[in-house]
Image (cartoon, rainbow, N blue to C red; front, side, top):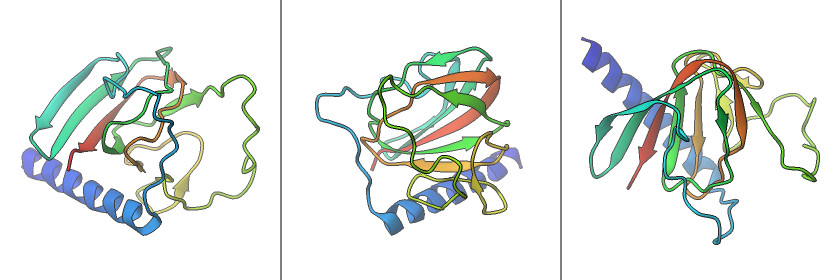
Amino acid sequence: MRKTLFTALVAATAVGGIAAGLSYGQHVQAADEVGYEPDVASGAPSKVLIENSRARITLASHPAGFKKEGGKRRPFDQIIVWVDEGDYTVIRPPGAPANPNAGAAPVRGPESAIALDGSVVTGKHPAGTVVWHPKDSRTPKTVINKAYRSLYIELKS
């Protein structure tokens, strides 16, 4: 039963992420000289649950206070599912321009975090939130405010 439920969750998440990506086109924001992220958990405790030629699914446990350095490219299209509420802060690089959308109403876009009810998530990510990131997009620098777990689904082909 648990395996069937997990498989259904993964399949639904993958279809939703792929559909979002295809509807908006692939959004690449990384320069060629930036290296690939070697570990989706950025050094946080993690376990590969499933891996084959088409996908890798990793469960990452991000402890409170953990710092993810970011700035690397994602080697594959990636779907992230928050198992627990995700509470973290993105650290903007020094001199980076202000976000022009700060304070604006949330708008669904190519890499929007989507809650179970279909709404766009800003701030803390409730359990069940899903986000899709395209291959070669950059990872942000973050600090984990409260421990949480997330599933990283990497689509290799």
